[in-house]
Image (cartoon, rainbow, N blue to C red):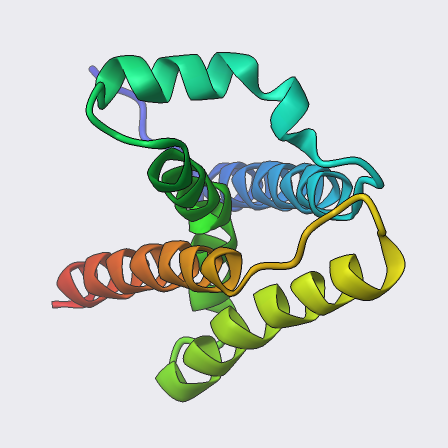
Length: 144
């Protein structure tokens, strides 16, 4: 006969999962900050990611691959952002645009070896918004 978990065991499981989620989010945000605010352009150290992208998309050029990698970089950001403001889609939209803009401004003003680009802002926002839409859609389906 299968055992049934007690409410306290269920709460402990939920608490453990929530804590793991917070730790994973914190690690991602620290890694993201390092990548975005590293004094030197990290593309020089991303050979593996570029080789893999060119292998998956052989007709892509460097700008397209860079755009795609920037989208991927911000997918977790959007998935973290969506639950923070679940009833305010406009706030997700604003934050998804403002954060990458501030990062690019900081890179342009404070990091002379980095190059600010509106393409990076668009790619980062696209990644955030895509993930936020997926999270919102899944949440809506689960609530039905």
